[in-house]
Image (cartoon, rainbow, N blue to C red):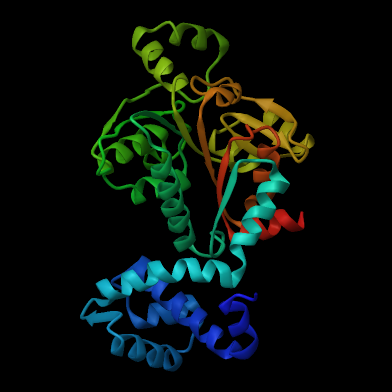
Length: 340
């Protein structure tokens, strides 16, 4: 028997287009609220006249409220938006694509959010929301959660909220700092995650990449050794996947290594490992923290990366990732992964 949505697609196609339009408006306002009408029109590509008509309708349905600072969702609007998400997943076929990608990549699960984070910063927030939801489903009893750095992980941190159950959470940085904005370093992100979940965290003040001599010296330090032991015993890892050259430049990699990465066609990076399109490791940075081989012993590994530009990096890394990995990505990356 055909589903009700399949019947609607054939008999009432215009209705489905209207539904998609109003869903996109509610979703954008829900993420950016309070927000002005002009900003919504420009961001979603509607004329102000069309948007005005839609906004008036949504206000009549008590889904939106407006004041001097802009539009916001009412409690009824928030509830409807949550209910609509499952319907829109079926409408757009996202749930089918998730299963196709799961089989293609050979991993445990794929979760796809609408949009392309290369084109809209809102989508990165949706990646964070999806990761937070997946993470909460996996928490049991006492949890040590190792976290890497990056803007995507920062988006995850923003979307975490306190656990209502009697679960213990301890956040630890998965590695030392990369030469990047302090707000996107693993120490900062694990601190924000602990604050937003009313839990605990440990700091890990060591460089991301070191010489062999410094490495041998640092791991003998009692404090560093203690945190490193916690990192290695994590029950969950939350991490991003980077574009190889972008990550190398962020690490202020010397020109000789950059040339090596380009000549060996590196496309992806994770945990200090650089991969080519075949998933082969073409370069490894000596880092203090979680190593690729450690992931095999960690029950829950969640990789978060989106944007069509990240497709090659995601595919390359996942050829080496444990099969238990859960990938949180967006439509932009998902479509590019299926094509490639």
